[in-house]
Image 1 (cartoon, rainbow, N blue to C red):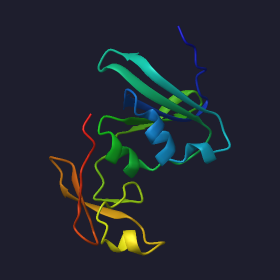
Image 2: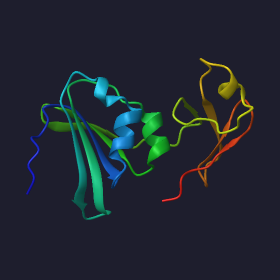
Image 3: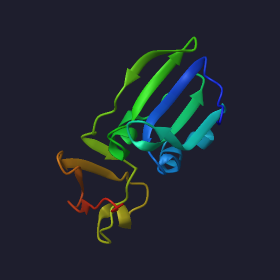
Length: 143
């Protein structure tokens, strides 16, 4: 059995879909943190079969919008004094900024540098987003 020390203070991102933790790691820019970050892939889960977990030591902020966009099943546990102080389940954000790129070659974000890539939620049930500049729909990769 793999043993990862428990945190005294930090964040545990739990119930990540198996195999997707590195995308979350990249989008949250966790490599820039000056603290211990543990990525656990394919951990056993009674609820999902397999899951990924990310543990971040220390007082840090994570972008709940990114997490809500990427994985609706994620839970974020805030650890204080070795115990869960609070637990959050991110929701699907109305807007997502600089997480996905517009595929329209004529979009202003493709032509001009330095413009934020902003997508707006247009259908909550299907989790569909559209570019706010050109209305191009974002197509989720099929698993």
